[in-house]
Length: 491
Image 1 (cartoon, rainbow, N blue to C red):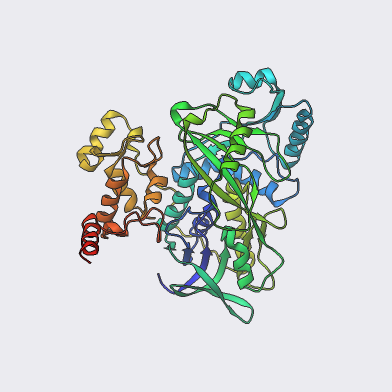
Image 2: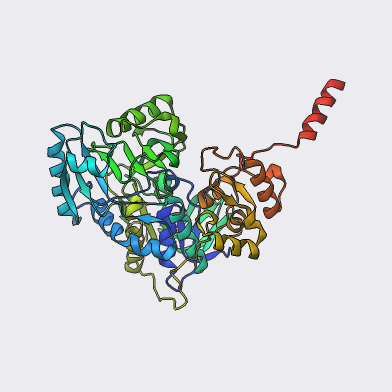
């Protein structure tokens, strides 16, 4: 990394990565900083992966405007980046007679927000579309523009395309302060040194209010809200569309949805917490989630669960997105409270940031060499037999299956390790290749993957980690353990 940039983007979540990509269209020196070992390590990796239609947000709010605008952009963005995206539609399910009034309110709100394709349908139509729905179903609101996306690859692909277009990426780089000169931001301080920047975009998610505080700005705070989830075996798929209950003031409710890879995802609940790293699942929370999901789909069976996880929403104190270029601190753009529908709105938020920077005086000269398209790495399991054979002939490593559940090959793993945004951890590989995402959850492949990562990264096996520093799989070799035991016995 050099030490001077036109724009520094703090945060490697979906909004930060799409913002860096949007800026890479112009003749700028751009630095994207992420405190973790990989992009997509916070809220962007632990959410419901739904592209919302936009009927739920309050009319006139930034959430409403940017949800609808972002939704419209997904076909093009995912097409350019080679990311799985499906407009399979979303349902809000009425389970009580009084819920029908809520459906009408949501439909009217959606119309005011500019959401097309909203219709209220009968219980019979609902059950025909989703036969496993509860017999208590009274009807529903169908939103044809809703859909599902691969949230991992949406974020990673945006980062890769940004890097391919000249953006520099600093992983394991935590911002510890802002450099200010006569009230203007002129750079960022990190544990790796100071980086000068004419403009700084604060897209730090759960930590965005702390970046604001570094600039002397108060009045806005993040109130983390935890959500817990179940992942079900894709061999036991339950639903075809996204199923919501009627929403509450703090949550869209416990959802049952297919994922872009065919699993069923159940959750989340909504638990306020003071901890910004509280991603521990609880027995009480998981019971709440499953009971809520079974109200929609009674046939859900815990025996089909293959994983549980929790994520944190960056709920803001204003109840709306905060997107500003504050007059008090020229050169700074703040993005705060980017909770749901933040993933849907992300492409539109990125464009809004570009506009704010232009209005703040940043010269934006289009770059003729900009290429919006990313060439997605082949997924061996999805290729025809002939294509698989051709790939193996070019690189025999594609003929060695490492993860049996998801049929992930050594060739795919090595390609991900050496991608424009490299996977340097087990979780990084999992998000890119689906390694360990099947029923065995890595029980078969982990030892082999440790060896591959060590070989390709040129490190000892004790240096290979699950998600970065502090999560190493191994502490020392077996013979070292035996030697220690022998020494202790001799003493």
